[in-house]
Image (cartoon, rainbow, N blue to C red; front, top):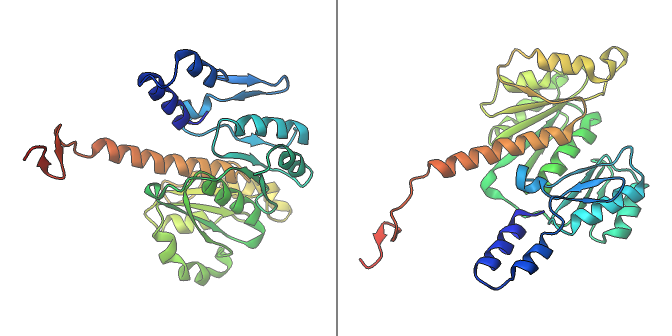
Length: 272
């Protein structure tokens, strides 16, 4: 359930424009709705700041559609990951706002509210073959209201391509680096930027890449200090972690901001 909806409901009870019974009806689906095959967690936004996201593999199109419709009742934006072209029509039939990105394999319902105060994330990919994972990350960030810059196909086989884009990457507030094969790009960027770097190994590569395991191990053994690593092909997880970094930074800044004395605005006390 969207935090803003809960806040408005409680404020309405406080000012008398909504009865307790009406508020209880509005909040009746907390903490979850039991659909039989799934328990849709409406309370997750209040606990974690973001609503539940639907992971499509292993679910039937009808199940995904039912979960999406229930989430859409109480959230401005609903996201379904790893969707295919069989799942999307079912979701679109249940939620007319649904949109599908076949590269990112994301279904999005609703419109994200842009949050420029969070900053931007640079999503960087080593090769074009890494685009599905990179776009899953970029699309997830966009659904969360985060600004995204994309720098693709700048792997270590031609570092001049990366250096040409370094100024744009450095201007972001966090960097997500997506790479398969030898998984070297996060280490390179980790030594060139001062922003947090999140590394995403992909399953792209020939036989000895072991489905992304070699890239994963290379990133875990990065000689660039402080590179965080998520699971193989986990563009969504990287986006969620980058979002948490930006949100935590914003929250810390807000807590440290000096508070004006009561009655004082813009340096003047009321009545001055």
